[in-house]
Length: 75
Image 1 (cartoon, one colour):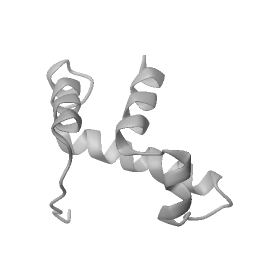
Image 2 (cartoon, one colour):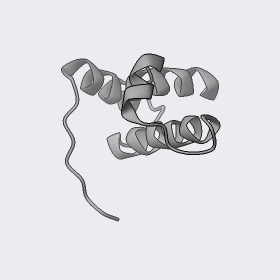
Image 3 (cartoon, helix red, strand yellow):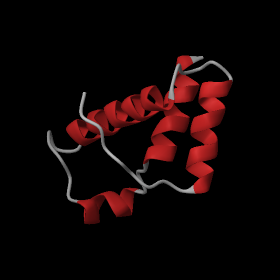
Image 4 (cartoon, helix red, strand yellow):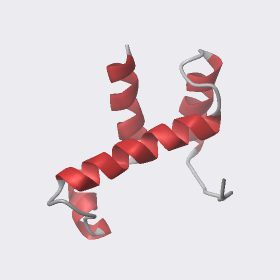
């Protein structure tokens, strides 16, 4: 699997570690994969393809929000 380095906020890191610590996910990588999957699904719903970043900003879509939504759906 490819390895990527990304920067996230301390708050996002804390939420990710919390998700792993409580057993909702097995690893931080699993959290990121779930968030990216949700992001891709959101993109597909937006006119069947990827939306430019400028358009996404107006929708306030981010990984933390996608994770929070996904976490509520898992329960």
